Length: 548
Image 1 (cartoon, rainbow, N blue to C red):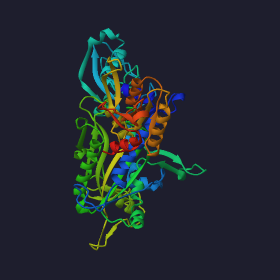
Image 2: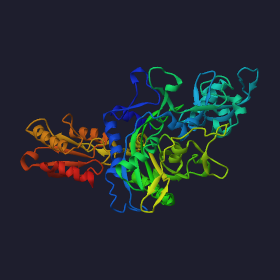
Image 3: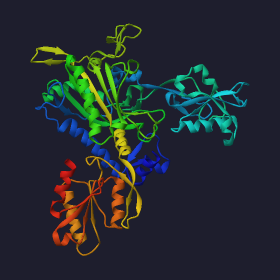
């Protein structure tokens, strides 16, 4: 993972936000290549899900024909939206503070392990107690190694005495122990035990102010998800575009979550981009549509080059399900920053039932003792958060029936998908140089649809009319709408290596033969096969290969 992060900065995929001022944790900037890569991810998603969808044809294993449309909604919505959706009351993580280091941690992201050390003791905060058995804590990704470092530091021991540490049980997370045991925990960076506060809720929505007065009535929130913008526009879309159930409304856009401890490069950030579908269907057809979208979205990642060995489709068990969910499955990827056998979420596909539309009609909903959704009441027996009062039901003019549609939600992260494609593309191998000597080669094997640069054009030498002919070929590729690069610096081998490192699928070389027979060499990044093709058909050939 360290190599991938270094490559991202060196070649202009991803930069730390505000780096010259020390960086802003949880925010990232995309460089020239990263911008192209992420745009290709978004465009591939939108093309495959929306613009290329043919509602007149049976789409694979879909239960029936359907339509897809797109929207783009505002980052800031009416505060009542978040109260009715449940975000205002329920969208939080449990956090804990360290009184000594003034640091704040998300409870489930602090790894701990119990340890003692040959009778050595450590002081407990605000007491005279000397503890011989403590729980050392870390937030480092390589937690096993750092737990040893933390334990030695806590007991005041040198590295050579690591063998004296006596571990009790395997590592776990802070949320898996009783709060009463916090007094024995040495927080990351702390010198004493017992410096952690009791856990408390931390709302993840980012608060802002609308207007000049800045009173509580002016408070608003940056959206934590794009989905609610779709739900509140359900009726507008249905009435204005004349779509009929079943249909999907899609949106790509930024969302914001005030994560306590952003981590793992761009995987968990405070500003991120989502690619979401809210698919509306008849209640009796929703189980079939849930299975369809679950399988289709999984296949999309495979089709764009993610290895099946590193991708899983995991169904949530009952305890994991959100308060609105009838069923949920996650598409997860084995990111290199995770331990062997662990996976990180790329996308969630949720069967949300009629929760969202009903919530915005009636107010915030909750489940009763029978598992049915009912309005949540306050201490006075009144609805806790009132809905809009608008009718968001759907009338089926063929069945002559009115009902509230069920919703299937495939929700993908554009940043996480981009990161997964970056990790999957990274390869190191050995290839012979121009003298036949094996050299290390770093190659980014992006799927051609996702590659930031589609082709590179090289004049073999900077004279004899080759640069002029290369400029013609370069212009033809640009005119065909392909992002390409022109490079005439260094040996041809070095130029190949530079393009391999950014994942360019095809390199075109103009040489002496080009000026006599009108052909050029096209080299494939993955197979390294070189072929001669007519110079005036380069754009056509590259386009055909990209679309094959």
